[in-house]
Length: 402
Image (spheres, rainbow, N blue to C red):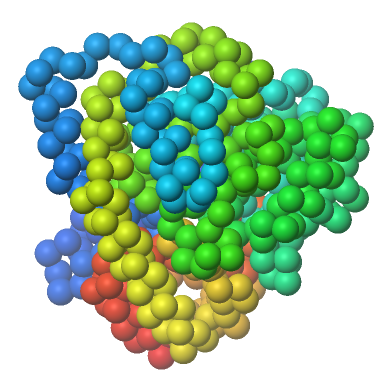
């Protein structure tokens, strides 16, 4: 069977490949005194709070499960609009909010609406791998720009300006970022958008971890800058609804109908049950619970980073949001018999993660997925697991590295 060149360009999602290997080993050691500890996948250990679950059950029992319009329920778009106003002090009209089948669908819609074959989109290296493949699926090219710890592993206006070419369509950013948990300073983001806008480009920003910011300096939405910025968000992370597959995007007025037409053909509408459940996310009791959980994520970060450093990992930039730690393991990998490497596919952090999985039964994500610049030195930890699991992971890694 002939496969399209578009499909062949899509690399495996190595985060999931490592996860499969970890799950296979986990099944073998499940009944031992050392079951697998997962600090590799960015999925909160919290589930949807009670009011959200109850709203979903009511929708199912009452039969309120028919299609909605492609842009989603107006009532939920209004709730999100009100959340922007109360949480960030930004007025975002409900008409510009489009509900989607997860943030992934929102990114796909944005890329299909704005990227032509041959267009380049500038992205930081390191960055979330799926985002560059959404660009590739629209026949564009993701151009990764190496970003340093001094730049918080984020693009700067100077780098965007220097990298801009006749083929550049715009930028795709993430703040806070996966894998680094770092955000772009609002002043720098404003300068980036000015560079992009002056060249007729588009600024797309993934803000799915915005609700999990731990620093008021960075916990601000890009939508305060300009109504031409395209923001992607999700109910998966802050709202703890990963498997419900519900997200949203905020787009300029001129793009709403374009995105709606695409969504009608691609998936009809987002899950109706998920939408009705998500209405309860914004109830005061739910918000209080989400804020309690956000404080717990911060406490996990504040424990885990010093503990990692005590093992010899280097964490060059402290994450200000999300639940990730991007750590350099190059100075300790030899303790596991791992040799340095010059490529991402052998030795270095790739082998380090598999050795740690085998010896300590701790699953970690190697840097291979996240770009090309020094990613063979880095691993990504997720602190979305329980505090107990994080303590156990540190203890086991300490023993393995000894």
